[in-house]
Image: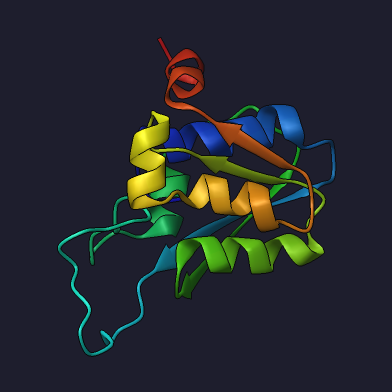
Length: 139
């Protein structure tokens, strides 16, 4: 979760399609580490949007309405989004991610959390594309 419509669509799909009665769905917000490594820059964000400092995952999720019988759990961690999601996949039955970019050239040049999750996840992965997120959005 990062506060974008595609992240919301991924959570919606997880709760309404991917989860069954009694399942637990874990929404994860990955924040960058507090300190930058020497020689790095935040000029280019290869893994999408960095959630604003005031963004609260719990408040954001509470403002969304979902038709679900699954239990929703939230977790905020610090690190690289792809690494943290792949790590979380170790004890998951399914990993659902929303993708922020389109086009092969963009993904090759800038990287993609979705692509890394598909390559390295320890469980099956569902990628919610911008087109799918648009179809899932409330009318």
